Length: 428
Image (tube, rainbow, N blue to C red):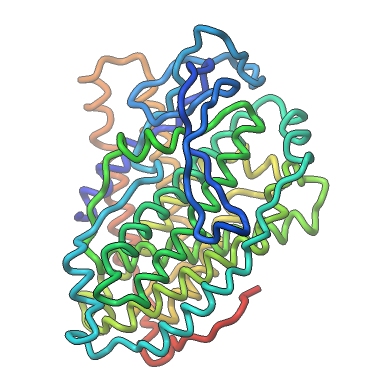
């Protein structure tokens, strides 16, 4: 995707829709994770006492009270509007993946390194970590008003993102089983982690009398195709930025317990280590494919994916400042801390990264936020479609200009295959 196309797509961004009334009785996918089932699984369970959330193209209105929805015999679907910034489901060229990890074809594969990583995943440090208690439901019942509504959205979006990872990793584990059993098993164990996270988040939604219909999402969502090298770039960044988001929130709330509005944040310290291990694995995958790291095209793509991930997070979060303010964080300060730390980590493996510590970088991000807010206002106006589209044109051009200018900022020449050696460790 070109920078102009990316800017045009971002012009479609709108806030996620509000939550409406309850839904009819349906079957939901519930994640089972216990000591006798280390890999975990999703099973069907009837759900008549809570609303089912589905990804929809339209949405129903809601009351402004922010109170929990009432259950009724004739309930309606709860819709969540999909936008560019909504967590997506991904697929890839699995035949190319099999070729990349064929030990007879690719002599760069360091099987000893993958074996070490496999032992890390087999240890399953968090097998008994995600155990709930009565504090969850009690905290949910106390949460009211706008914070309750935005927190439900946080759970829904997070669950969707984790479930997306589960589906991709599970399929990679299945497809690579014959080609490279070690790598395949790591993907399967990562899918275990992602499923565990998604199930834990979905269980959190039940505290608010809601549930995400994961079975429906699996069948109904459109899948975005990425070539394997793009999967490596994007997923590495996703896992590492997830680590820095979780550990930053955990440290903040540990130091400021008065903002601990829901117990799920207490689990972030161990949780983020799953994200960190996943990122380490993708670092090893990229080292095994030096052609993805060692030429001028790799530098351009590395900068592109850094820009895409950082801008998406910044625009997303600036639409949801109520959530971060509700837990005592300044949204922009939080995001810049996460971006800077992620960029420093990424510089150990990517051949080039953005100069995110240059004041110009944040200045341009803030301009994009302003433009995006104007685009949102145009979309929510009462104008006819033709007028809306005409008003969007200069704003899309301005957003494209900011994206291109940010991309063309002087980059930082960074990591190499040699210095990004794998060292199993906890990062705090």
